[in-house]
Amino acid sequence: MAFLAPATASAETEGTLDFEVYDDQVNPGDKITLFGTCYAEEFPSTPVVSDVLDAPDLTGERSSTGSWFVTTKATVKADASGGSHPVSYQCGDSVITRNLEVHEVQVRREIGLVPDTVRPGQQITIRAYCTDENYIPSVPDAKGLLVPALARSEGATLEDPIIGFGSVEPNATPGKYKITFQCGGQVSGEYTIVAANAPTSPVPPQAQPQVPVKPKGAADTGSLDPAPESNGGALALTLGGLAVFAGGGLLAYRRRQNA
Image 1 (cartoon, rainbow, N blue to C red):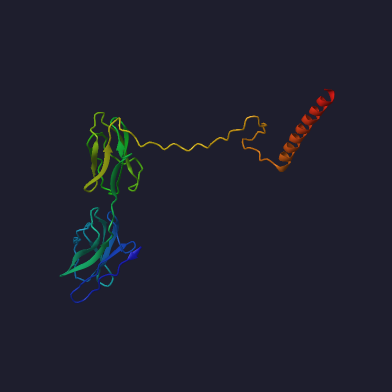
Image 2: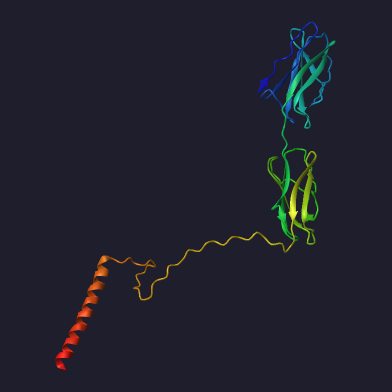
């Protein structure tokens, strides 16, 4: 909580004015207290002059020093623009003025379809944002769509999306369109309607790993990888061939002896 420095009294200024605010700034919709001192002889209830405050008249209570302690409660208007705004009241023959700093509030305004490319007869979701606290539920304007009024869900905050469900008309004409709704002014988004039989983007086939082919006659070892040949295997094959050759020669020798 901060108390802004009050306007000081002088020959021309017969009083002071201050605001009880937070962080030296206020937001639209905030409630604040106005208070000050009026040094006039009399102080009847007097209105607060301001274009950003809704406030009842200031009332005064005479202090022991003879001055008037003045105060009232006020609410910053919901449509107050950001910046410095004068706030005044009448004290005797003087107008006491103090500037009130209003924080600039950024309002999020968006609308669109999920997904944003649709076909006739398709069910759709409308997602919008409107952080304006004065938002009034309304039906979006969208060609080729059947959509409900967009209203905040119970318990939703201003930052939460506003969700609606609808569908594309069965005979909707393909093309690019805009969907609009009101959030402190007109807000729009784009969507595309395609033909019911329009091709979709093909999904590239995933590469399949090659399965090694086991050589015919190979031993089933439980592995698909061919076993590497060792030097021992090659030597055994060579010795086997020599044995066959030697056996054949011996058989030919015996046949000559018997002839």
